[in-house]
Length: 315
Image (tube, rainbow, N blue to C red):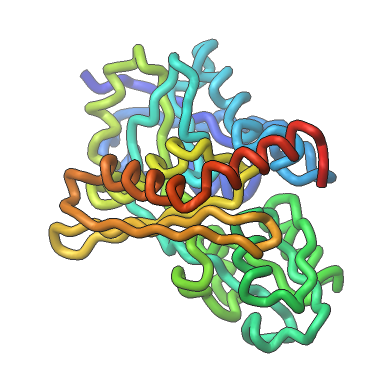
């Protein structure tokens, strides 16, 4: 039975609102008689801008308030950027639906330079991601990598104010907000392996809301779901969070899924890489296989050392 009304919980940033409005429009097209409203919320992740996510609690800061809205009945579902969604959700919640992925690549944005290779020694590059930072430092040790927090518009404003020679952002976010012209160059996945789920949207619901599964099913993309499942399996197996420079990217060609992943130290001096391929239905096991390969190379020790540093507060 189709409900007469659904409410979508969303962060209040411009990009988050675009994502929620996209889901809202899709639902209205599918169910013209259903009223679909948005509940706009501010999260701690949006409010704490003076410290990196890895220092203040990680990705969960972006979803807690939205989950509270699901629990108390103010909303029926929440829309998340999948790369910012923790792989281990509280027991009461479930990631019911993954929509088709947009561009998964990282984008180079600069007002004066065309590519990373054009930047002079000592040029300042801004990024909010340890994953990006590690890969940048490995390829361009002569550059200065500085933290960059805030929503997309805030980050662009900091670039335009002259605080950075360039910044690295998710291409999908820029494209969704009509800012593709700001992209000077998209980094190849071989050079900047994306985060698990990058470019995809996920819908979170309460597990007990079984009535929503069938309603939301038409929004699901089978291919993106398989790729994201493999990617998030790597992250889950390795305890991935904002405190760990970890990347995972899966692609499908025909019936074969290929998953690539890496774990690194933030300085980029140590990077472990692994890859596996198999049939699409094996997505989860392929993700676990890649994670095990990374462990055997030495990722377990690296991750343990990073965890110890984070607990001690060492830089």
